[in-house]
Length: 200
Image 1: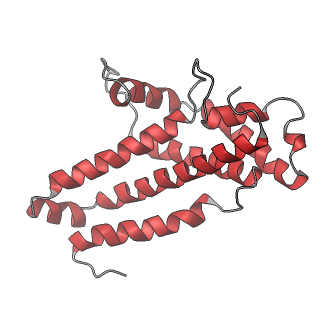
Image 2: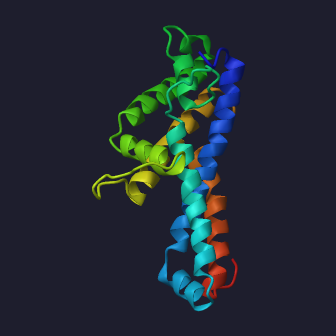
């Protein structure tokens, strides 16, 4: 087992919550770039290619963060992903070792993980990651590959697992939504320059 004690669990939970914020913030940036009032001025100024590179990089990051959380253990056994943290919590009586007020969030993290692990969106997202992002391989899904909505929706689900885990591990009592507001405001400011809007 890669995560062997509560301190390692806290370290994984803290890093995971940061990943969740980065992924959710990246989605905010991508969604606010996809408006005619942004796209048309970018194209008029011949800046569309650069903007597409930024959006593609954000999508790559979101995809990697969301899928790697569910990767099976490596041969080396030193995984520090979400599955490793959840596996630490699974043995009977383990969650009962935590302070009583943290146990509901830890149990919620396990339940949410199991639900997400069975989400039908995960296998095609994992396949796409393996074939096109982590490697370069033949990738033929007959037009039935994952959509942006699949990626964004699944990533949101993963974020809620990290939220419960970090709360249960005693890292903080923050909600992910409370932290994303700043990214939303920043994304609006970033793209509003192209829309000709004054900064808020």
